[in-house]
Image (cartoon, rainbow, N blue to C red; front, side, top):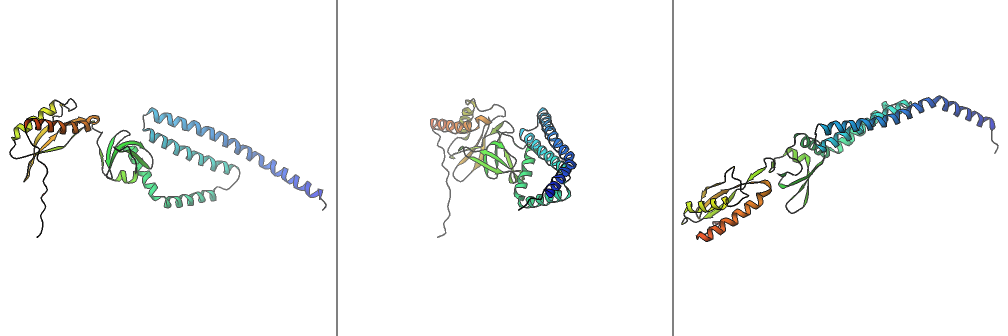
Length: 274
C-alpha cells in the first residue's frame, strides 16, 4: 500500500486552515467559560452573604443559592456552545422536553418541594419545636427541601413528606413557650368536693415547676353515673411539661391517700342483648 503524500499534504493543509479559522472562536469560548465560572463563584458567595446578613432561614439560604448556582451554570453552558458556533435552538428544545418529562414523572416530589418552600417561607415551625401533624408527634430535627425530620419520644427518626405536612393541620406545642396540661381525677360522690379541690390546689402550689401565671385551674369537669370528674389544668414551660403532668398526678394521689380520699376507678358500662 503506497501512501499518497499529496493527499496527506492536502488533508494537513485543510486541517491547519480549519484550525486557524476556528481557533479564535475556541479561544474566546474557553475564556468565556473560565471567566464565567469565576464570576458565578463570586456572585454565589455575594448572594449568600446578603441572605445571611438579612437573617434568612439557613435552609432557604442554601436552597436559593444552589438554585442560583445551577441556573447560572446552565446559562454559561448555553453561551459557551453558542460561542463555539453550535446551534442552541435544538439544544434548548431538548432541555425543554427533558424538563417536561422529568416534571411529569416527579409530580409527588414536586409537591413535596413546593411544601418545603411554603414551610421555609411561612415558618409554621422551626428546628427544635415539638409539633404534631399527620398523626405523628415529635421534635423537629431538620427541615429539608422534600421532607421534615422528626425525633419522637422513643428517639425514633420520622421523615414526613413536606407536601402532606404543609397541606394538613399542624399543632406547634413550642410556639408559645408554655403549655397547659389537661388532667382528670375521678372521685366518688361521698367525697367532699371542696376538700379535694383544696388538696389539689395545694399540690400545685408546692410544685415550683407549675407557673403562677397563667393560674392553674381546678374545677368540676363532669358528673358521671359512677364518679365526679375533676379537671386539673396546670401551666408549665415546655421543658417542664412532662414533669409537671406526672408530678401533679403523683402528688394528688399521695395527698388523697393521706386524707382518706379514694380515687374512683373508671367504670365502663357494657349493655348486653340477652
